[in-house]
Length: 367
Image 1 (spheres, rainbow, N blue to C red):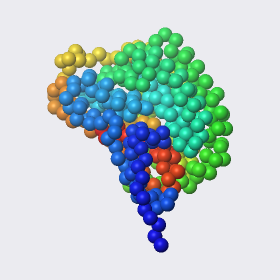
Image 2: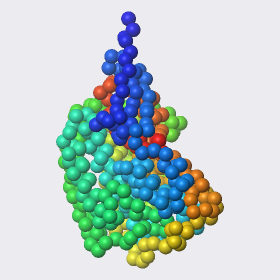
Image 3: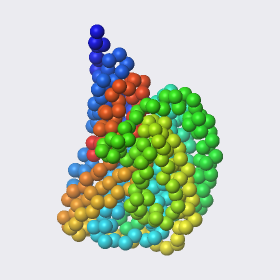
Image 4: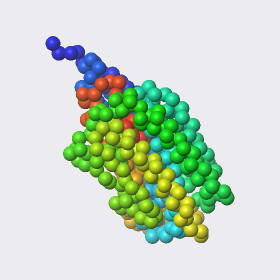
């Protein structure tokens, strides 16, 4: 006798969901037969909004495309404008940008560790990591005036230079996070229950990873080494030494191991940046923002966000507003294409566990 199928709705307001989104599940017993992603419960329509804003006014908008990691959005928009306009960026600003991007990566990994652990009932970890993330947010507040949305990276460089003594405070936070890693390992990564729940769950077939457009840690968790910072370096990443961790297994465990190693790589990158950062200008000043026009042209740029390869296609018609902005982010692929595929046959209890391992930002899907 065929088991009765039932429709369940997970989200949009659910502690295991990565933002306000919903997954419509068709289940037989506690096994998922079909999954369907629904978004639109949070910020949306950024691309269209930007067509009606001046170039400078676009920077506060793009931050909302991924709240936990807004800085790659600023980076992409700034570099696209600079490429179209032909504007040079001071060397010091490039180093500062990398520092900001890597601090944002560390802050995002703090949220990921908390979400990944919390989605299996290990609630001590999010208490730790949300608290530890605040030390990074304190640095952002001092540097940019904002803890989450920064509007700090913009065309021509960065908005302001480093405050006195910030370098030492950044190094202190890095040292603190390094000292916390053994605690994270004992509680999460070396936890037998975490490994048992993670191994063999949420498998992305390696032969499908490229076809589906998987990027970032989920791709490197399939043993495929790809990182925009290495393959198509931008800013000063080509002057820094770091490795791209990979792990075989294609499952939640592999993705977790990749991210755990990437935390150490980001700490190393920031230390190198602070050591090599030159003196000099931090901003190649733009004209009056109210009368600033960008020559007609287009550009496609991309960064390596914490979720993977993240691209912007920007078109200018020579006016004071973008003609078109298109965002190609990993969340659409990971949160729709991949999630709907790999949830088939999974247990209900693993839905949020799998979702957190993919790194999904709902506003980026409904951009």
